[in-house]
Image 1 (cartoon, one colour):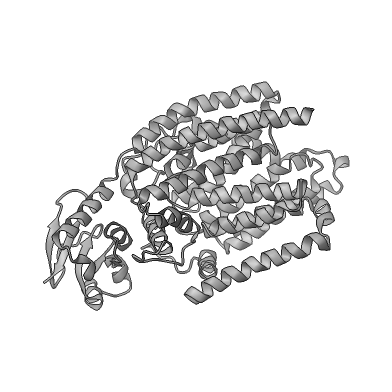
Image 2: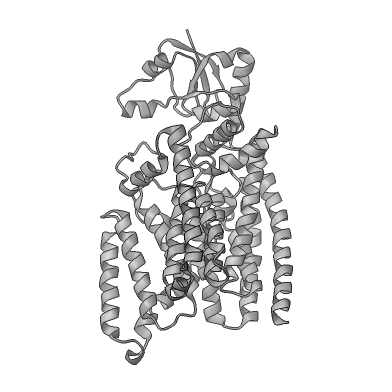
Length: 544
């Protein structure tokens, strides 16, 4: 009877969450329609979606394909436009929040899980990128469900592992770095290995191994057949070494504490910074006081959490001094290795520390704390190490960070009603902040507007433009607007490789060159036919 009452209550709260998210996502969708698209990578996903739906305007198949494949579905039925990408992103955003609710429900009561999920959905960095068409939030959606199904696979039924692996694959092929959720999934299984090994029967294991191998063979076969290579392997090696990254990359930043320093701006800001629509960075925002309150709550709980081993009596932990000392030494070596050795070594040491900490600590009640700490740590280490730092890359840590806000409140207040009241206060405070921030970003990027006008002008100027070669420093952008492949030719990248713009244009026999960001003043052999003469300077050159 109690289980039925709990299920009924859970279903009611889930219905409330779903209805709220439909309304809230509708507001974000309206905002995104006005904002449109300006981020380079998103045009790549649109170009790939066009290819998958049977219209080739140029593609980059080395990037993860899932979001483009999903967007290709409405494209295939004739709904070709940015709106389709926003709709797909919106559906995945709702899917993320529902999955987060279920995951939190493994640790908290349903009311607490509801409030925590809503708080997460209104964080500044989430609001900024949720429906843009970037892959970060969609990939996180699949990652949350992958971890959730892993938990259910261990605690409910082995069959859930099939879904866990499927959603891991979807997360990985939505954004390659999201594949690190596999470490979190594996860690949860390792700390519960006594229960897991009971599931390792031939009846369970053999079909699952075949299932995994079949996925691997099919995916690798498709890539090798169509591309002759497996792109995510080279990308993984590039991230591991970062040797191929130079200062011409957008977001080049060597400060290993970049994400720590900008964390308040990612949580709550009343309005976007003036520079956002040129840099698409939220790091210049002015955070609210609430951001620091949330960070304090997280820090307080984590300090309490990592000090548990030291605070246990000698009689409760055998060889306590040795264990504390060993973890301390390993932690110091991990800190020293950070930003000096491959981040994979730091990651491995961090995982070992958390495994030992769990093994040696008598309190096993709150396993999810260990899982969330690992989740937060591996993504901070990876992205802080890499020399290209973009705000949206750190979105995955916002799940464990929000989780620790709630665990901190729970630890301090103990009583369920008081915890709910505290979370309600945070939610009530964050709603006007969220509304104010959303209003500040709900207008079209001037750069996007000028690029659209330039594309429209060229299509009117030369009705036969589709039969000529075109080039631009924002080739993927104009490929989308003109629905024709436009070569990407960026002067600063050419100069870094000891090449010249004119030689490149001659080699591809470009009739038109569209300068959107490079501020060229003259191109030998070309004359300017379009100049918008505005702060956002867009020019079109035609071959003489």
